[in-house]
Image 1 (cartoon, rainbow, N blue to C red):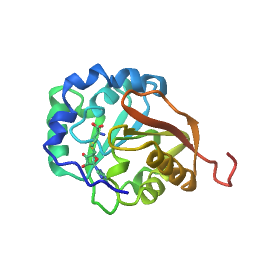
Image 2: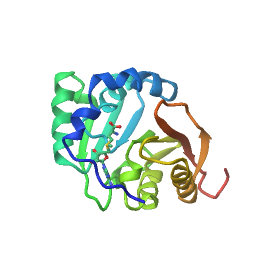
Image 3: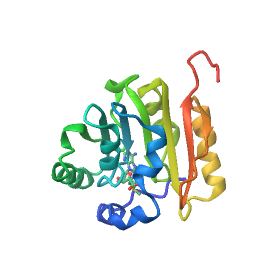
Image 4: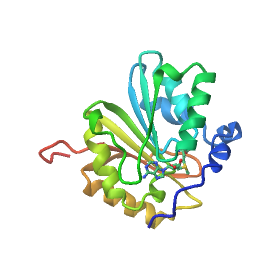
Length: 191
Ligand SMILES: C[S@@+](CC[C@H](N)C(=O)[O-])C[C@H]1O[C@@H](n2cnc3c(N)ncnc32)[C@H](O)[C@@H]1O
């Protein structure tokens, strides 16, 4: 069940550098990324992960950062410019009804929804929108905060993702998180 969207001012806390002590973005994402890749950061907020993701994909890579709150995106843009990473980061403000990523079909190497799915009223719709954006060998990482999301609720999220056409690749160990790395099941049904 959706727990409501986090208020914009919490974005400052989420982007606090101290968070790196227990969730280091480079350590979390390096195993899944190479230079030149394209990443979709869903519910990016003020960019705690977006900026390091842009660093990991390098000058030929791209991060598309989507959030429904204009204030989150405004702050992310400022941070990206200050870090001289703005040329690698495309920001988008979406509506509660959808991400608006139809134009990204088969372009994404890694989609990330970190601490987001429990805020979304219909995860099935979110997953159905993300799936066509992925390349055939693309991956989708979902991580949910252990403090907010019970194990049963997380397994329900995984089940919904499977119904939306994903299968489990692995369960990465991310501190204070329940997480799963998924890949799209080949069109035609082969898993
Ligand atoms: C708890 S924050 C997590 C932010 C970031 N991923 C992190 O881990 O630092 C959740 C973010 O998801 C955004 N969000 C919630 N529902 C969304 C939706 N349906 N589409 C896009 N963004 C959404 C919120 O506005 C908020 O910025």
